[in-house]
Amino acid sequence: MDTRTTYRTAVVRVPAGPDSVELIDVPRRALGAGQLRVRIEAAAVNPADVWVTDGFFHSIGMIHQPEQTGLGWDFAGVVTATDTDLAIPVGARVAGMVPGFDRDFGSFAQEVTVQQDWVAVVPDDLSLTAAATVPLNALTAGQIVDLLGDGNGRHLLVTGAAGAVGSFVVPLARDRGWVVSGFARASDEAFVRGLGAEFVSAPSRGWDAVADTALLQEDGAALVRDGGTFVGVRPAALPTPGRGVAVRAVSVVPDASRLATLLEMAARDVLRTRIVDVLPLEKVSEALRNVAAGGVRGRYVLTP
Ligand SMILES: NC(=O)c1ccc[n+]([C@@H]2O[C@H](COP(=O)([O-])OP(=O)(O)OC[C@H]3O[C@@H](n4cnc5c(N)ncnc54)[C@H](OP(=O)(O)O)[C@@H]3O)[C@@H](O)[C@H]2O)c1
Image (cartoon, rainbow, N blue to C red; front, side, top):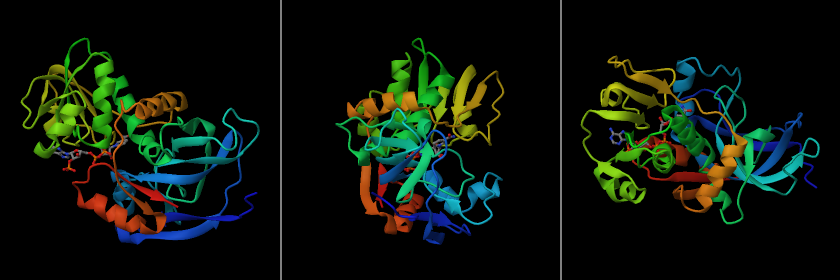
């Protein structure tokens, strides 16, 4: 039986970049109603984690933690305790995401105590390392496609199609009837074509819709035809193209049943998971530095 009273976690107290991350021991969190505790085996590092460490989200008023901000959205691990008899039992392999920004805990930790509807069971044939790269970005991709609606043969440009969110948008949007093209760096052409998208290295204007995961913002919205649709990833900074272009932005929320489907799709390689390296939690600053430097393809995964 695991009787520990504290656990190790990565936090930032004074955000000043990846090297301001500290590993500290904090009291174990009590299980609340409908919650379960997960021993984390893998936690993926996302670009937004860098922007927590460098104070960007603090600067735009999204984080107000008085002491320390918890790092990490994505995790995969094994359930070690549940509040009562939940649908997911102790011992289950699960993956999930910790939502939101303004919180003193996260997934860069030995364990996490979460709502049961933040997690889903990982299929037997998907590793926990790969599963940890799915929740945040595949749910975001799914919710982008919800905002796009059915394609009915219309043409969608995905910017950042070689990135985590963009590469998940491609197959999900194709499933909804969009003819998908991906804008990415020239060196990503083979990967983007392998997703089943046309490859675009210098997009022209006139797309029925643009899913802007590369954060082109106004430049991305300018690519949409009059009366088309732009879906961005920064709800706090919407472009204003005018011309009848519908402008929307995703703000990802947990969705357990959809996550179960997305994990199944990852197990079948319909969603491509990509891992750059697996590093111990102690090397969290190194992983964040590498992500901040840019050009990374796939995810760093931390193991506590
Ligand atoms: N709103 C939400 O709920 C939500 C949820 C999840 C993620 N997000 C956001 O979604 C965005 C994408 O996340 P991600 O994890 O997919 O990032 P990622 O894996 O780094 O992918 C972004 C991709 O866009 C490419 N890119 C950037 N600028 C480009 C340009 N000018 N031309 C061509 N390609 C370009 C990048 O290439 P290089 O690396 O070569 O620059 C990279 O391949 C991030 O801003 C993230 O914070 C939002």
